Length: 265
Image (cartoon, rainbow, N blue to C red; front, side, top):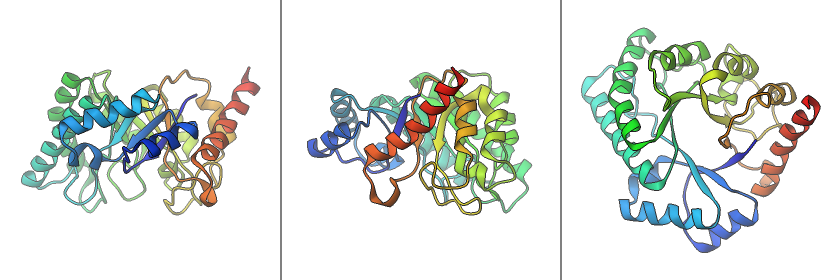
């Protein structure tokens, strides 16, 4: 299995790119600011510099929080949010990004079914834009108290839209602090997973520890995931433990999955 490194802020300097290359990073997920704050020419040029050194921009996280909520009930605010997501999908294509990670909604203060109906309307608008630009959209399971905090809810929405460019993102840390554990969430979502966010925690807080420094049963989870031939890099959505290097982070996660694969074989 391949793995991606979280590079929320992109530093396009040769020194920064060479550092990632030396560390063994060959795929990254970036934050939305790279796509929304740079002009289109720079987006293409910067992504091209990384590609020349063998580093793929696999995914980008879409904006979230505040008014960046595709399920919000306020029509005017939701329309503005959809417009931002449209621009993000267009710019993702310029960067060669294959997948945009989408939060279904923010903290749940209203009826979830009403919020999910608004989410459906947003996806109906955005999915044709994604398909036109050849960019996948992955709906992520959320922490408790947010819209979409159950894998069954995520799958219900994903299954309603018959598109190879719309699927699920399994966030292991979110599942670990919710009503499900990460293994159950994986089993429910595995048929439609097009992105992974791997991180760990203490079972109570969404603190984005690197695997395996929390309470997730990584050997059991990795054993199940490795049974399937996912052909995209899974994002390690955490920083290295105790200020270790990105290379150390990648090696530790690779060891979890390689060990499980050898046992299966």
